[in-house]
Amino acid sequence: MSTTEPHARCATRLHHYLLATLSAASLNACSGAQVQPSPARCPTEALESMRQLELPIGVGGPIQLDLQQPDDSDQTNYRIVIHDGPITSRLDESLGELPANTLFYGRLWTGGEKIQGRYTRARTPDGKEYPVCFVLGNETGMTKSPGSQPGYTRAQPWSVVTVVDRFP
Picture 1 (cartoon, rainbow, N blue to C red):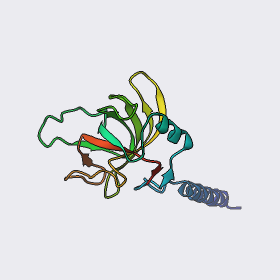
Picture 2 (picture 1 turned 30 degrees about the vertical axis):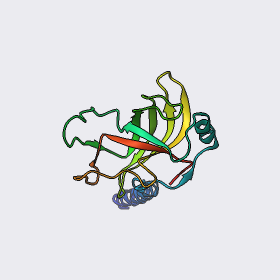
Picture 3 (picture 1 turned 45 degrees about the horizontal axis):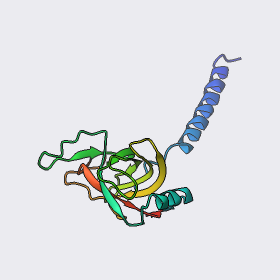
C-alpha cells in the first residue's frame, strides 16, 4: 500500500474546496461603483415636508458644497476635490422656510460627465430635521472643473440646490 495515495486524495479534496470557495466569493463580488444614480420618485413624506416649508418645485438656493473642506473661496480659481459618497452641504441664504445655515445631507456621484448630487434630509440651525428632495445644480447636475480625472473630481466650492419632486 502506497503512503502517497492519502495525501493525493487530500490534496484533490482541498483543491475542490478551494475552487468552490473562490467561485462563491466571486459571485458575491461587487460590480463596481454606480456611475449615475437611477431615477426615483420623491417620497410622500418629503413632498409634504417641502410643501409645509414653502419649497416649490424648481426653486433653488446657493450652498457651500462640502463642509469637510476649507472655505478658501476668496482665492482666485479656488477649487475643491470631491468624491462619490455622502456629502454635507450648507445653505447660504434662506430658502422658503429653511433659514440660512441649514445643513443638507445627501450623496454625490462623480463618475459621469457631470457631478450628480441628491439631498434627502435637511437640518435647520435650531436642530429640526426634515425629509426633502433636492438635486445638486439643476436636473442635469453640476459641471466638473477643468483638471478633473476619474477619482479626482474638481469642483467649485459653491453651487446651488434645486427642489425636485423626482430624482432624475
